[in-house]
Length: 241
Image (tube, rainbow, N blue to C red; front, side):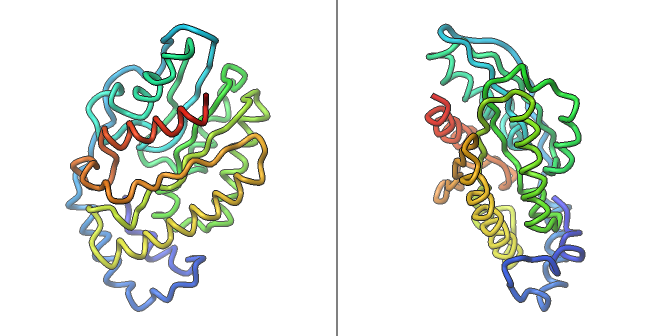
């Protein structure tokens, strides 16, 4: 997480919040978070494979550090592992994870341009927090997210399931008022994302409203822990089935 958005992004804060007077405080808190919050590695374990019995299902999971499983030690505990474990009871599932810590929607779109999407039936996305933090405007972000969905759907994916943004306003790693400001910005992005996805008949929005469960987060206070990944995977399973 970077504090540079405080300098470059506040003038694009689309929710009309008057936070300029907090600029120096937010910048200092952003620098403090950058120095003090532990940087957890991506978990070990396979990022592709085949599991289960039943009808064939080809699944692609793309996104940032949450899609990569940061916050747990092994992919079996991460979103991919727990999602595959649930779906394998109903399907012969082939899966692949394309996720990178720090990824923005724009950087992931560029990363995936050469991927053959015809190899997948369903794609799950988990993106947005890095765009919020880095001061990307909401309109630019929606355009990039729409381009990503169009790339996947045009390439052969039948359905895209879009994960909403997490409750940043509840993240223990963030001090106040930085938590409040980023939380409001994330909420604004999430509402805009939901409206955008609802207008696309081949896409489904899944909210990540895990408020009240912040004690289930990872030790860095910024990423999901195994219980949250499990709940997230359960919600996605209902949409995929």
